[in-house]
Image (spheres, helix red, strand yellow):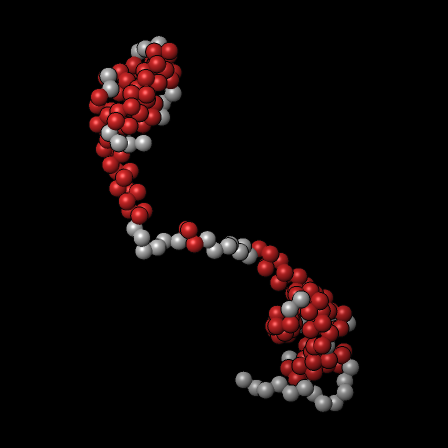
Length: 190
C-alpha cells in the first residue's frame, strides 16, 4: 500500500478536487481532506460527544468520500464534506439507538445446581398421578374432561358428541375437575 503524502503546493479546493476526480490522484484528495479534518472532527464531536468515536468517524468519512467522489460532481467541497460528516454521525446515532441493551439478570442464567431437572421430574410424576386420577372418574366425566381439556372442544361440541344436554356437560366437567383436584391432593400433588 502506498503512503499518501499531501501535495505541498498550494492549490484551491476546486483544483485538488478536479485532480482527484479526473485522475484519481490520491495525494490531491488527501491534501484536500486534511484541510478540513479539524472541521470534521469538530462536527463529529458535536454529534457523537465522544473523542474516540469522533476520531473513528473522521477516518470512516474519508473512506466514504473516496467512494462518493467517484460518482458525484461537487462544487463546494467544504460544504459538501460537512454534510457528509453530519449525515455519517446521524447514522451512527441511529444505529446506536437501534441496538438493544439488556441488563444482565443472573437469576436467568443456568448454574451448576440442577434443580430445573427436579422440576421436570416432578411434573412427570404429576402427570402419572393425573392419569391414575382420571381412571377414578366416572366414564362420562372422563369423556367430558378429555374432550374439553385435551381435545379443546367447547361445551356445545361435547354435548353433540356425547348426545347430552349442555348443562349436563357443564356439570360433568365441573364435577370431574373437582374430583381430579381432590384425588391429586390426596396423592401429594398441589
